Each structure stands twice: as structure tokens, then as C-alpha cells.
Length: 341
Ligand code: MRU
Image (cartoon, rainbow, N blue to C red; front, side, top):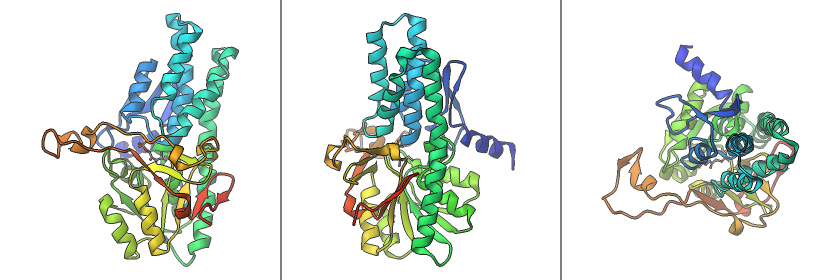
């Protein structure tokens, strides 16, 4: 393995970290062209990194929320903020993206420790990071077991969307973690990866990770997915989620719903891989999940280059909601739920 490749593999083991009172994280907007580490020292810098998706993916957002509280506490000490200011800065972090429930959940969990002092806050944030990796390994093994027993009879081709690997989950993965676990068992034939417009997390990030891991894969345009599924080119669709409502409705990257419809029509499993912390008991159904809408320039441009006439207006819903009845299984570190039955 060349030095660039081994640097990349090391980086996948530490996508975000707490170093000398600040956050170090991979800038995911620059991949696969450049592996660049951000040194985030203020709440403004963290919110900016989250909003522009340099730091992204539900579990990683949870980790960023947790470390963000430690960052805010440090900045409060340096700049003499009162409790009210600290509270509003923590809220700014928790609100930076609305759909991924882990961001708010982990920020709130660590904020509850603020009265115990900065060392306790740091320890609580670090504990969340440690748990996150462990959880994704456990859910990946469970998912691989489930798929091999459901689909049986030889290595599987898995269709996936967006990026749900080490970059999104701090060193392993959820949906892509299941892919890794299948690969490690010799039970994976190949992966079909949706490019995931508009910001191309599938082509830029998932293909990059699969490349580092030596896992066979092919990239497709999002619009090709239902047709290829209908042609029997995949054995199962496996995706992650930003939030699962109490009734099993699933919010995930825009384009997920069409995969679920195609999977149902083709009679193959549509599996959602999430940590328990992504299931939001406080949100009864998908209608109550806030769906982030982003700048239309992300649609009218591709990688910063105009792809539509000037002045074109675009709709840029970042996520969609897949109704529970289309979901074959939700796999977590603790259980398998069948909301569609
Ligand atoms: O906008 P992003 O890149 O943060 O969206 C990420 C996704 O939609 C992922 O599928 C989801 O967060 C699960 S990550 C394990």
C-alpha cells in the first residue's frame, strides 16, 4: 500500500477527535481530491463545518455535537461568557442541522454535565465517541447475519445510497458497516453505489472508502437505481438514516424513498441500519420530522460549476421520508425491527 493509501486508511480510523482543547476532523467537502484535517477551535467554526457538510452523517454529527459542547465550554472560559451565552452557543450547535436527531441528542446529553465542570464535559463527550464506534460494529455484524440468513445462497450484491461508512460513523459504518461485515465473511459479491446528488456523498465518499477497503463496487447515477433494481441486479438495498420516527418512518438522504419503492416492487429487502440513538421516540411519525432544505445553488451547480442557466430556481430537499410500510427491517446494535409488517 502506498503512503497516500495508508494515510487514508489511518484517517478512516480517526475521522473526528478531541486534541488539546479543540476538535480535529476530516474536511469531507474536499474528498476524494484532498485529505485535509480541519482544526476547529470555536463554535462559529464548528457550526460552519456542520452547515457546509465538512462534518456530516448522523452518528458523526452526534459526535460533533458532543465535542461541540466541550469546545463551547472552553471558549466560554477564554472569553468570559455567562451561563446564558453558553447555553445559546450550545443551542446554535444543536440546531445547525435539523434532520439528524443525533446532533441535538448528543449535544443535549453532554450539556447536562456542564454544571460538573470542563473535565466532566470532556469525559462525557469522549465517552460518546467511544460508544459510537462500538455500536456501529455491533449493528453491522447483526445486519450481515440477517442478510445472509434472509438471502442465503452465495455472495450478495448490495445497493446503497449516500455515505454511511467510517466517515459518517467514526471509523466503521452503519449500512456500509454491514457491507464491510459481509465482505469480511466472504459473503459480499459487489456494491452498487448511488452517486447521491446534489453533493455526491456516494461517489466522492462511499466510493473512496470502498476503494481504501478493496471492496468491489460500481457507481451509478441516482436515476438509474430503480431500473437496475427491477432488472435483478441487486439482492438487497441497505441504507442508513438521519432519524427514525417512533412509527418506523425513516428520514434519510433524498433519493432513499425511490429505492424503497423499487425494492418493494422487485421483492427484495429494504434494510435501514441505525444506532438505537437515531430512533426518536419523541417524534411520532415521518410528518413530524423536520426536513432540511438547502441552498438551491447545490442543485444548479455541480462541484461548483454552473449546470443550469443563471437564475434557475431549484428545490433542494436534503432528505426524504420513507414510510414504515416499505421498510423490511431496521437493524440496530440491539435488535431487528420489522416496521412494515
Ligand atoms: O447530508 P448528509 O451527508 O449528512 O446525509 C447523510 C445521510 O443521509 C446518511 O445516510 C445518514 O446520516 C446516515 S449516516 C450513517
